[in-house]
Length: 406
Image 1: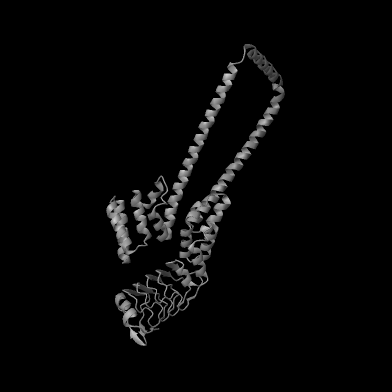
Image 2: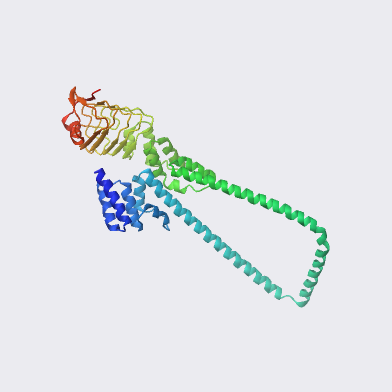
């Protein structure tokens, strides 16, 4: 099914680039019928919605697209590369619109100022024209007198004027240089803050933007999505810190992530998580850790974990995907008993023991062993034939303990 989904996604984007929007839409909808949480398919529907053919064209839109339901689902279910690309387009659109608004405001202010000056000049001219002849003659005499005084003091002020000019030039040059330096330095720091955001270092980006006095509205509006992204990488401490910084402590994610760090995985799943990457640093999954967690759909077990305890995932009927680390050595008895939605499993090469009934009552159609060495089932030799046969054996035919032959 995964191969079919990948093929349809690829065909959908190819049809979109050819201008075949209807064909492309049909392909993306077929993908979502098989995988309702496929971020790439929602991204494709977003492009169709906006009349575009490529993701990179989103940045050319006049208005932001973050109100689109397809965008929200693409951000929720998409991988890191997709969410960062979508955010990048939004940032460019908002930046461009902010620049236009600023230019419009400046033009408007300039026009109003020119209009005010013109009105003041009109009034001054009106007052001037109302003066009597003797007033005009008096003003003329005063101007002649002032001109005479200026001529007399011109020579005395010459040297002083030159000195003042030079001093003013030096001060002005220094001020402009300082302003240019500060602006360049500010822009460099801002670029660094944006790069932190693109690199998925959301907490660091938030602090950097705050220090510069820049807007953090994008981080605040997407705090939940960014926190999920951090959690998907196992960075629960950073995810919790981001939720605190953006005043999202009332989010169900805050409580769920705290439960994960406390090792109360059942409570975390019952809080609303359907996909869970366990935190880096743990070495084993306790017995019955996720027993009867019927809502969980995906589990990613990090490197460093060597053992899955007995009945750890028993009765997780919605569990569709399990990612085992290369450090895994032991899959205990009844670990995945009754995981009826589990259809595929990849056994890392360092696994030496698969306990009794570990995958019993699953619906495995594919089981890939990275190390093709022979195994024994309750001390009876077993030879791996093909993925489908092996999947059937470990979930139905053989419910004994598997041991790798050394």
